[in-house]
Image (cartoon, rainbow, N blue to C red; front, side):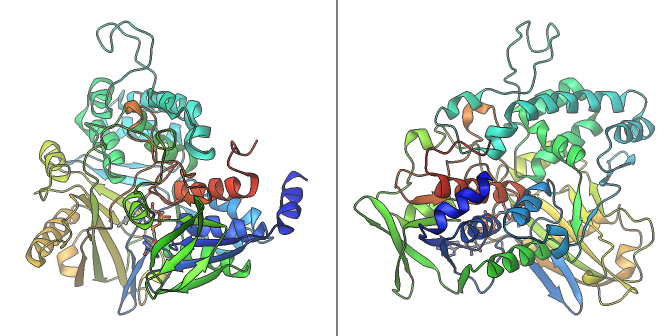
Length: 511
Ligand SMILES: Cc1cc2nc3c(=O)[nH]c(=O)nc-3n(C[C@H](O)[C@H](O)[C@H](O)COP(=O)(O)OP(=O)(O)OC[C@H]3O[C@@H](n4cnc5c(N)ncnc54)[C@H](O)[C@@H]3O)c2cc1C
C-alpha cells in the first residue's frame, strides 16, 4: 500500500529527470524513477548502454569484458519486481555456478569450492589442504558474517549516513586472544592481510582470502579486515551466471527502462550540469543542446562529476568520506581465447590460478608495475551464446593489474602480459596451446578502473561519496558513489537515488 501511494503522489507531480551515463547504476535509478511517474531521459556518450558491462564478439565467439558473474541477484530481482509485473527471471536465465570456483595454488594443490554451501566449502578445504583448513576458513567467514550483519543496511540499503564516521570503525570482530590483537574487546584495526596471516596461517588459505580483495581492486595490505565480507557475500548468496553473459543483464535492465518509458540518447556526452539559483536545473551536451530538468542523476566518477559542475566536487564534508584516498585503484586486463574442441564436461566455470609470488604481484599491481606472474581468473562458461558451435569453446582470462596512464599500455606490454596470462592459464586448461584458434588481448583503458564495494573500517576511507550532493537536485549514482562498485552495489545506488528523489532528501532508506 505504501509503495502504491508513493507512486500515486508523484505521478501528480511529474518531474523531468536528466540522467548522465547508461551504466548499471544509472539505468537502475532511471527505471525506478520512470515507474514513479517522472519523465526520464538518459544521455550516454557511447553508442550503447551498460558501461562496464560490455561484450567482445568475434567470429561467433562472445566474451564479457567487465564483471563476469553476478553476486546478490536479489538486487536485480527487486528492481524488476518494483518496475513491472514480469520478474527478472522472465528476462534473464540465471543459473548458480557450481562449483562456485576452483583454485589452483603454486604448490600444485587445487580445490573446488561448492556454491553457497558453508559446510561443503569446509569439507572441500579440509580434503584439499589438510584437516583444520576448512574450520579456519569457516571461522573467518563466521566473523565476516558478524561484520556483514552489523553494516549491511548502512553499506548497502540506506543513503550514506551524515555521521558516516561511525562506519570508519571496523566491524570485523577482533580475535579475543592475548597477543593477537591485544586484550581489548573493541574492534580490530587490522588489515585483511594481517587477519589472513594470523587467522589462516596456511599460505593457500591466505591467497584464497586475499584474492577476493584484489579481484575487487583492493590492496589486502591496506584494506580493513571487514573486506572479509567479500567472500562471505559470495559464499552465502551464491555465484550466478546469466545466460548470454553479464551483458545480458545490461540488456534486460535497458529493456525494462525502455518498457517503462525511459528515453535514451546515445552518442550524447554531457559537458556541463546547469546550476540555477543554487539548484541543478539541467544538462548541456557536447553539441550545445541545453535540456532543463528538475533533477540530475550523474552515473560518472566523482572526478568527472567535479568537472561538470561549478565549484568542483559537489559534496559537503557530511556527504563524503574525508582522508587520504585508499591507494591507487587498479584496472582489469582481459584476454579472449577462442579454442578448437568442445568444452569438456565437468569443467569449472571459474578457476583462479594463484600467483607463485604474491608479494611481487601486490607490489606491481599497487605500485604501478606489471606483475611477472599474475593471478589469473579463467572463465569457461557452459553457454552456447559464447561460441559458434559445440565444437569450440570461448575462454576469458582476467587479471587485476595496475591502472595504465592516460595513454593506456604500450602494444608490446599488452602482448607480453597476455602471453604471461595465457601461460599461467595452462594450469586450468589442459592442451590450451594446441587448442588455441586465436587470442585477443583487451587491455585496460585509463578509465576502466575497478570500483570496489564500500567497506566499513579504515577510518571511512573505503566509503564512497553520498548519493545526495551539496547541490540540491543533483545526485550521484553508480559504482563510484555510495554504496560502491560492482553490479549489485551499483544497482542498490540506483534504488537509493530513486528513493531520495521520490521521498525527499531526508529519506533514510526503506523500512
Ligand atoms: C573492466 C572492468 C571489470 C570489472 N569487473 C568487475 C568484477 O569482476 N566484479 C565487480 O563486482 N565489479 C566489476 N567491475 C565494476 C562494475 O562493472 C561496475 O561497478 C558496475 O557495472 C556499475 O557501473 P556504473 O553504474 O558505475 O556505471 P559504469 O559502468 O561505470 O558506466 C558509466 C557510463 O557513463 C558514461 N559516461 C561517462 N561520462 C559521461 C558523460 N559525461 N556523458 C554521458 N555519459 C557518460 C560512460 O560512457 C558509461 O557508459 C568492473 C568494471 C570494469 C570497468
